[in-house]
Length: 194
Image 1 (spheres, one colour):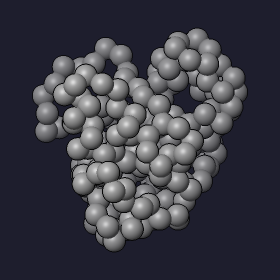
Image 2 (tube, rainbow, N blue to C red):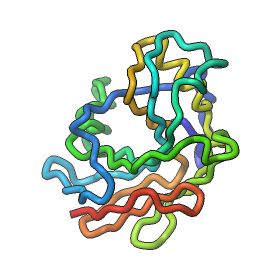
Image 3 (cartoon, rainbow, N blue to C red):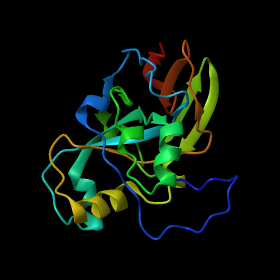
């Protein structure tokens, strides 16, 4: 969990945790998300997303800012009921995280649009009510730290996307919900659950 949850007291992790989603999980802006028949508990997790712009391996944290120049926003949709069963058995989570459409994503904007990428407000509204509100300054690991860490294990390629983590307020989505995601006060992502 890349943000500090106020409602939980947990030890601070020493390293980030990551998993992969296939490109079939990407859901372009404004396309509806169709609730899958294999789950009864899909949850939303809003996240700032960065797009890698150059090939990199074992990237030093002090140089990580050179490996992305665009920022977007996305939702990490999770089949929580499936994830729970996988966790109980000690199995990987991809089935609960990587299904078709599980990564609705906005268009990207230049990071130069922001005075400080370590101080970006973002939020998720569901049916007009704000349910998640975050700021990149509250992340457990900075964007640069995440890039450096992931690049230790796998080569980052041009166009790779890194979802950076979610603030508190994660919760379920239902059919007919409308999800709207904002960076600062600019709506970046808007879609319906069907």
